[in-house]
Image 1: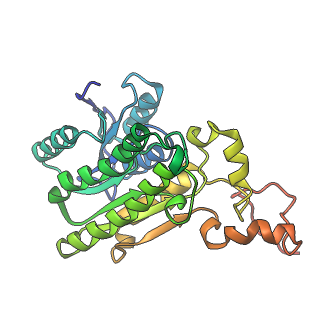
Image 2 (image 1 turned 90 degrees about the horizontal axis):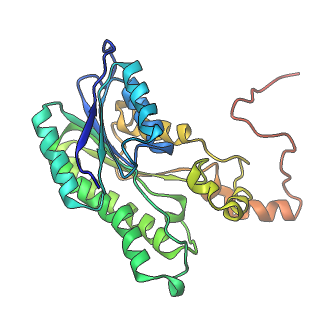
Length: 292
C-alpha cells in the first residue's frame, strides 16, 4: 500500500463557508456515506483529509476531486490502512505542518467480515474486523485529539447492530465496542471542549449491503419507514454533530435507522397480527403531505 498523501489542489476560487480555514479528517471517505460527508465538508469550505484503502486512481476519488474543485476547497487523499499506527502518525505530522485548526474527525472506515456466528468465527477474520472497526478509531483519536481545537468534534460510526443482538459476532462486537470508545473519549475530552458522539446507521443503500441480497431482503422487513437510508441522510446527521448546532451534545448514540431500534423489533409482529399494514404506495422521502 502506498502511504503517500495525494493532494488534490483546486483552481476554483474559494467560497466563504462555515468550515473555511478549518480542517477535517474522514476515514473510509472515498465511497458511500463517507464520500457523502466529505462532499458536505468540502461544500462548507473545509480542507478534508480522507483515509481509504481504495486505489488512488479509482473513479470515486475523481468524483471527490470534482466536488473539491467546485467548492474551491482542498482535498487530500491518503491511501492508508486505518489499523496502521504509522498512518495516523504521518497524518498528525502533516496536520501540524499545515497549520489549519483540526475541527472534525469522523471514524467511518469499517468492514463487515464474513458475518459468522461466534462458534464459526475464524480468528484471523475476527482480528481484521476489530483492527479496522475498533483499533483504527482508537488510533485516530489517540493521534489527532491532541491537535483538535476547542469546539471541535469527533464522530464514530457504529451501527444498529451495536445497539442490539446480531448473529455476526466480530462485526457486532466491534460496533458495540465503538460505543464504549465513544463514551471513554467523550469523558476525557469534554474539559478541553471537544465533543465525541456516535452515529448508528441502520440499512444504508450502499454497495456493502447490496453484496448480500438475502440479507438485504431480510433487513428491509424490519424497517418501519419501509426504506433504506441514503448515504446523504446518514452524512447529514454526522455533519450536524460536527457543527455548532450540536455544541452541547457529547457521549450520545444517535440511531439513523428509520425506526428499527425504536420500533422495529415488533414491526413484523404488528404486520403479522394485522395491527399494522405496510403502506402499499412506494415510500419516498420526497413525499409531501396533502390536505383534502
